[in-house]
Image 1 (tube, rainbow over the protein chains, first blue to last red):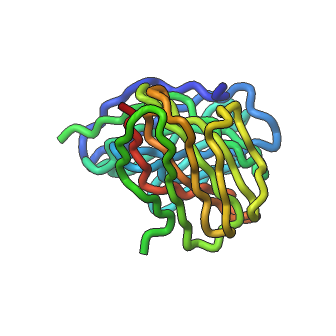
Image 2: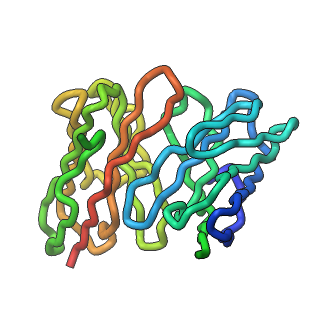
Amino acid sequence: DAKTTQPPSMDCAEGRAANLPCNHSTISGNEYVYWYRQIHSQGPQYIIHGLKNNETNEMASLIITEDRKSSTLILPHATLRDTAVYYCIVKALRDDKIIFGKGTRLHILP
Amino acid sequence: DTAVSQTPKYLVTQMGNDKSIKCEQNLGHDTMYWYKQDSKKFLKIMFSYNNKELIINETVPNRFSPKSPDKAHLNLHINSLELGDSAVYFCASSQDGGPDTQYFGPGTRLTVL
């Protein structure tokens, strides 16, 4: 079973920041937080990951709380192409298995 | 060039047939995977191979047999297809070491009639 809890769906206006929350209260010390997304009819796409520090790349920012029990993925300026299902995953670095939960279906509204 | 490719993109076949789905990655990765996404959109791992050796084999019927002729290819052969095998199958790959992220192919939609 997935070790994360996410809201089933969210809406965000185009051009605004999309903030996607994730709870992972049972995360272990060696587990990272990964985010993937799946755009309709495509394969999942890696977005970002982190251990305890906040991370930023060209796609998004990841904010992890100090106790590591929750995190937020931030898409700073959402576009219509960001409409997708977003998966928050916790996984140890050398653990090959990704366990996908139900994710959050993000709708970007024009 | 596509990093992880799968063929065919669509596969429609009759119950009881045997079919194969091919996967190739040109990323030089060491590990490859097969995932199944059913009609409810749940994505579950089936197998993983590292350097041609089976690492993960989830509770998948033995009608499903992964075959890895070399590090860049992981094919999925399915015998005696059943209606419940209808799903989208995704191949993925990852590199040992580094950030441990997985790169997914575009998927193969299998429909069993």
